[in-house]
Length: 116
Image (cartoon, rainbow, N blue to C red; front, side):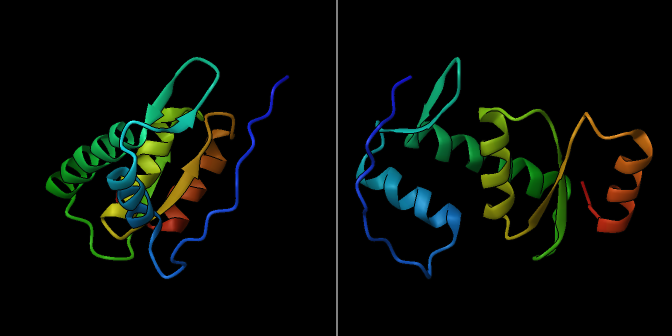
């Protein structure tokens, strides 16, 4: 097993997650941002995918700021894009797992007030 060495890099702690990604995209768009077992995304791919999904989310649901959006998918690069898109529209996310029993998923969706 190999481990990458990551140097400590200072960043503005007042920035939101999606703004940090956009900032890094501007600095090094072709650098690897996210890696899973089978593929990877550059900062440019991550930011552009999240922006597209955020626009679609805004067009379909037009969520008010601080709304909750359910993300129901397996852990993968797409989930990172989805989380970033939800942050981009200034909402929170509720991770829903396929492994949860149906009654648990129903409870989480109802209790969270998730819009999508």
